[in-house]
Image (cartoon, rainbow, N blue to C red; front, top):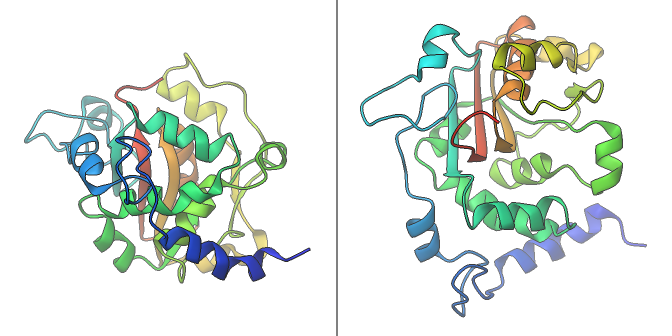
Length: 238
């Protein structure tokens, strides 16, 4: 059986081939054509530290004003609205890892994402609990991160130490409490975070509790700047 490493050049070739747009069905096109990205993922005013939609000219949402997020910045490529939930589900739950490249391209096209990736020292995908990783066969955040900044990705530094109870319906403070101790740095490598600029990568952000919990671990280890880049952001905490 061919190793994953041996298959990477072939996977890169497939990523570059033209295909039918999954949204408008135009051909030839990328899996998501430029016209659909421009129409369905337009730049929108968002809170600088949690990426929730805000009125134009507002920098921080009321929740981040009352309880500042542990992120220096948070960037989202699109709203979690049609057609993106269906595309993400194909990628995340149906084993279609080929979606990683077009979705990462969508993320890169969002304002300020390129500078954030260029200025950081490390890109850390949000880790999955072992049971969830076994179910899916891959970590979708890692696949996105590898395509965003392959030379800066570290998949073994930030660890998920346990699965957590369902977050739905909990207020933000309780979600953070629920996630306390759910993330940690690899003990022998924790010093590598000190003085570094870190970017966390994830696919969907709802309340932000998981990203905030991971960011707090990085800050406690001495990271000087922690940003997050996500593919999609829900309109309100869920």
